[in-house]
Amino acid sequence: MRVSVLIPVFNKATFVKEAVRSVLDGSWKDLEVVAVDDASTDDSLRILEDIGDRRIRIVRHASNLGPAAAANTGIAAARGEYIVRLDADDIAVPERIARQVAFMDAHPDVGASGGWLQLFGDREVTWKFPLSDDDARAGLLFGVPVSQGASIMRREVLERHGLRYDPAWPRVGEDWLFWARLASVGRIANLDEPMTLYRRGANNITRGGDRIANHREILRLLFPLVGLHPTPEQIDTHLMALTYFHEPPDAQAVRRLRAWFDHLLWLNARQGLFPQAAFARTVGTMWDRVYHYLPRYGWGASIAHMKAGGHWPADRILYLLKWRVNALLGRAPS
Image (tube, rainbow, N blue to C red):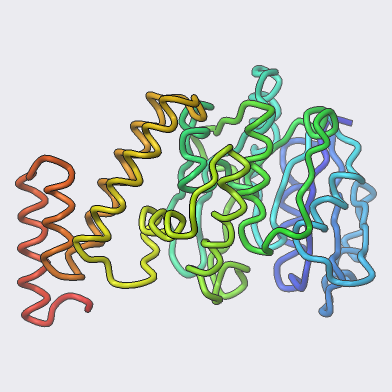
């Protein structure tokens, strides 16, 4: 068997049949669906059983163990050459598996790959991911390099290196940590097209909670996986790079961020943690991105950003002026 589609399920009765059917009715037929019911308390298990397709295998946890444990159970049960991930409230596009298998077959050095997420629900937008291994690896400190729900993994790589999710990881962000582990032993990539329709709404596990606290914990676990050991203060500065502000940023915070970015570039030049050209591009992109969040906090942070960057682009000055004038007129969010 070539493909095992792993679908962890916890209280997704409203959506899980549509998710499973999107796989079974797709163009690729040589597959099994491994549905791991993580002790759902709604009708998810009954709905899975009622689908009645011989290609479905259901594994049930006696108690709710969380997404990391559910993923590990599914990986252990999978029999396919490739493991395809799909969330129980999302939809695989009809040609997804065929296209991903063709890509992995053509690139035997790639351990895992993914593609775009086409969002629907609350809003419709496309989330894209870096295409090359260099760019995906260079972005590991700044975000998930592969969408878990649009991913395909080479099972042989997982087994050879004993790659699994750590059940002690946070229930949000475990995918980011897993990709950091995988990137240390194999190449990663993404296709430049949608693989999954991602349902955006109140059903998402990422909704609610303290996002800053969640990301602080993820970063605390992530950095050692890539060979870095920042202080708690540096982790808080890195949160600013992700546009999570635990307090309103001022000029001093912007200067700290610039110093942190320069330190990361210096470390990478010495230790070769990430592809250097791609990492420099990524750091530059993240530095520029932060600027567009600063004008709402006043003049000082924005001016410090341009000063620290060593140039004063006319479009950024105009953006700052427009933002502050609109704020004075009550036309911009506080």
